Image (cartoon, rainbow, N blue to C red; front, top):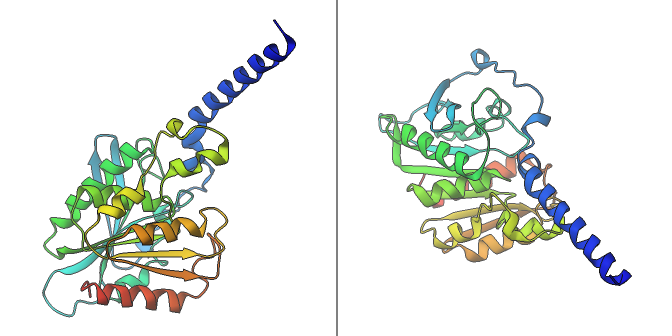
Length: 272
């Protein structure tokens, strides 16, 4: 065999092995659950919290429901279903999301399968099913208005929120620091996008979504470039984009402005 062909054959073999490696380890990259510190689980110290375990096809999954601080009437309250980033746990969220309960919303934070104390393994399929079960549980509550449920996803949580938006009705969708699709990152790892096991095609969901969409993104996001937020906003039928001069993990740079902007969106969308 000619040395040039021999080199090409070895290079092709090395690339195939590399692609196989990426295919195998990609879920550890997307869902680094074993790199997260242990969950404190200090539920007794969190005011207005209900711990609700749901049963899914993939095992039992923990959800936390933060009740509104005060109800202005006896009518059911609007609610937010929140999906966190890939390096977080629901334990980290109650105080972060407390401004939503101050606005009069109930907030359901749903753990990913295999994260924290929850059973199963994270994947697009298991996460999509888990959030559907969580939604059905929340929408059936008498103290929650099923017509005013908002889906809110941060980073990879945007994928979870969009999966749910494609399966269940919602009044509005909020995507923070999220992406168009996981497949768009395949070139970063020099592999074909067909090897992506959990594509989370947010762009297609947003394009077909009939209600208001709020896109929040940092202009200097070093993990999910700002261009993803712009593309999602352009795809939305009723979209609004809010940008901040920050990166991925330091968003929001100003909490008061951030929550004011979200409240304005919820009011304009008829949620509040």
